[in-house]
Every structure is written in structure tokens, then in C-alpha cells.
Amino acid sequence: MNYWLLKTEPETFSWATLANDGHTVWDGVRNYQARNFLRQMKEGDKALFYHSGKEKQVVGICSIVKGSYPEKGQEANNWVVVEIVPDQLLENPVTLKSIKSVPVLSEMLLIRHTRLSVMPISSLEFYTIVELSKKQKP
Image 1: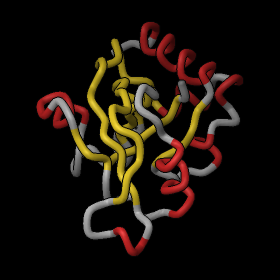
Image 2: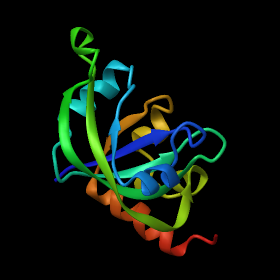
Image 3: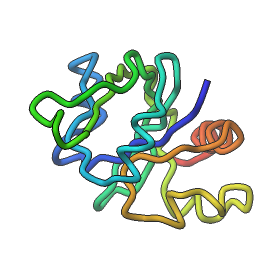
Image 4: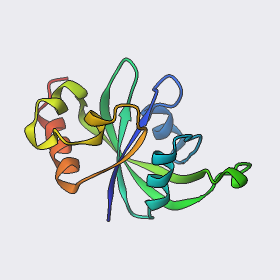
């Protein structure tokens, strides 16, 4: 199993929307590096769901239920999508500020490549953030 972080503007698509819908196709990614990461995703992988923009915080955990396949209407451009479902809302959101304060998380692409919307994370990074959510104050 691999671990990922998916960023979204909550005004465009939020955790609440995913939780309400129960499933979504993660589409519209138009960055080549992010697209290449999407191509690596497999069914059963886990992802942290990150609200970007004003919030800048990890809010939930989701599962990849269908690995990458061509985005409808974008086949000629080689853009791909994956399908995700919500697993759980974190006990408390984990802010970017909190993530930056933890030495073991200092090399995350989230910190080093701030414009990237899809990125791999290590299992240590994944579980460290999940544990942080249990300690954060709401």
C-alpha cells in the first residue's frame, strides 16, 4: 500500500462534499508531476485529504478505490483520474503550521513544493499526521 496527500480548495470540493457523496472521481489535475503521481495510485492506497486555500489543513483520510485511468475527454492529452471514497474525518484538523513544526515532516512535498496538488507521502508521515490529529486542539 502507498500513501498520498490530495489537496483541494474547499470552496470547490470539500471533505463535506466527499462525505455526503460517498465517492468521487478525482479529476481536473493539470500538472504533469501531479498527473504522474496519479498514475502510480492503486486500489487500496490511502490518502490524506487536505483543504488548501485559506484553511491549509489535513481534514480526513480517504481510500483509492480505482487506480488511474484516462480522464474522459482528455485521453489525447494523457490526463488521468482516480476514484476515491472517504474513510474518516480526522479527530481534529492538522494545520500546515503544525505540520511544519514537526521535524520528521520537514521534508514533505507539501512543505517543499507548495503548488503540487497530488503527492506521495511516507507511511511515517501519514501516521504522524493522523496521531497529530488526536492531539490538536479544535
